[in-house]
Image 1 (cartoon, rainbow, N blue to C red):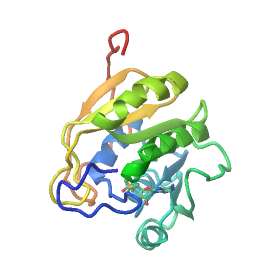
Image 2: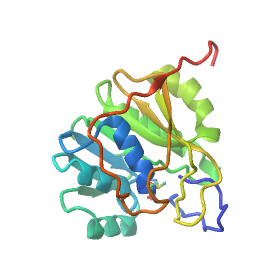
Image 3: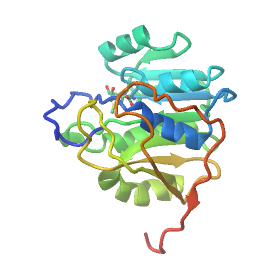
Length: 228
Ligand SMILES: C[S@@+](CC[C@H](N)C(=O)[O-])C[C@H]1O[C@@H](n2cnc3c(N)ncnc32)[C@H](O)[C@@H]1O
């Protein structure tokens, strides 16, 4: 998703905004996804495949699947991304899982103003598909979903870790977004860890030239005050 038209961008009907590579790499570093990772990863709302592609590039042994509802975006993903990625034209909200993924990772759509519950439904579906053993990673606006994450989702699915992006991402390559973002991570041994992720690499879709670490960072653990 992206916040409202700060840069004069037309809002895409299905909320297509491409996540910059530096922001994807930042969370894949946290997750320790590198050459040895051979899990099953799903990128729901894959768009042109930026997230799925970066996983496939960093972890060639991984089983990666991208699910997208807009045929034109999926065609572009198929034409330009690694041949090893499986693509499916489907609505994530009604998609039937065919196994339990190790990782579900997305930059979810927020939907039209008339349906602001879309992002939450997207996240709930991911948490349900991943079950207790899988990890769910979502790029979320701090000012929009944090209260929901704290209350409803947290009560049902537990506390996520939160890795805030120090720089606002650019979803169109020119100018940064109007709001701040964080990667939220739910999963085994997750909950309450917090870090600030620095921008390493350009605000564009091109992969940065920094080497890809294969070991996870150790984030700070901060317990939120009682009552949050
Ligand atoms: C914010 S974009 C993210 C695109 C891509 N994952 C990335 O990070 O560059 C959200 C994507 O979700 C897709 N989408 C919206 N509703 C969907 C649904 N119900 N099922 C599957 N994809 C959906 C949109 O078409 C759009 O490509």
